[in-house]
Length: 225
Image (cartoon, rainbow, N blue to C red; front, side):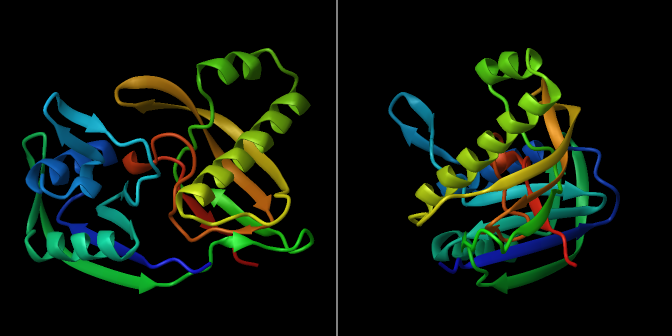
């Protein structure tokens, strides 16, 4: 299948000292009427988190805010946002937007043949482990850890496919070359993973896998050549 994707690259006047989580919070508060920006639904009992694959995802790199939108509705939302935005205010720090670049594309998201593997790297840390499989990871040998991460990665791809209404027609094969790093998600210390992997699946650049996708985690980038 082909996805409709808009990448926004917001260049600001200085290097960011804040996280993608804070960027998400700022835009979600400023444009509260657009639930896809903050992934919460207003109810009588307050805001309720939506447990579906986030179709707007945020990353920060040096002096760029990178925002990805998937699908017609999210693309329309992002276009409205950039037309009404000249600065970002994150925890009392103001970042003046100097330039906005938009890149629209319709990349493929699908399974490939077993012998047609694609190579990717994690552009941002991949949060693969929950509390249960973290303990399993800690108690495993190196080969068992790699196999566990392979299975989790396949599960992540299957989960995204289901959310995007894509039926995977055959088996996904993957090989990972990852290393653990310490990171923070919602101010909680966690183990993330960086590195490379191969898989017989086409994944658009900057799309996220795993936990914390809308906060900038698990973004992948294809390795050419």
